[in-house]
Amino acid sequence: MNLIPMGAGDFDFLIGQWRVAHRRLNERLADCAEWTKFGGAMTTCKILGGQGNLDDTTIHFPDGLYRAAAIRAYDPDKAIWSIWWLDGRHPGTIDTPMVGRFEHGVGTFYAGEKFAGRPIRVRFMWTMPALDSPRWEQAFSVDGGATWETNWVMDFSRAT
Image (cartoon, rainbow, N blue to C red):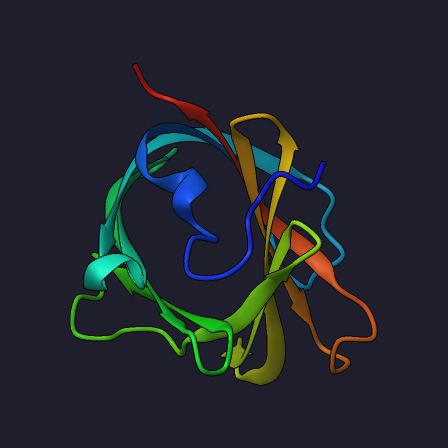
């Protein structure tokens, strides 16, 4: 379904409070097929006069709770978003920005990173499988994006 708008309002669908159903691959880039499920919550608000937004996230890992924040900013001249992740377990470091845009209702964002000491490509995808039920997926590639391993999926439902 192509229900997500394009432009500075791309992430307007995410504004508000959410329950989050997480599914994370137990081992990344290790031919693993086992997933762990856990819950979480997220609140998103607009910043930068509507040209950005901020998530406050709680993740209930099986081995304990952790907090994080996503910061998104839209560049209208380039029609692209940059997304930064701040992990509460490592508050002195902010991740390399994921950069991309929404096309045909799908938001796709990329960055180069390192995982277990080797260079990888990281991809975030935002989709809307059902009305008001966004989904985020993270995938890694070790071959420059020829193939991808999805390793984390988050399904959102509105909190009341």
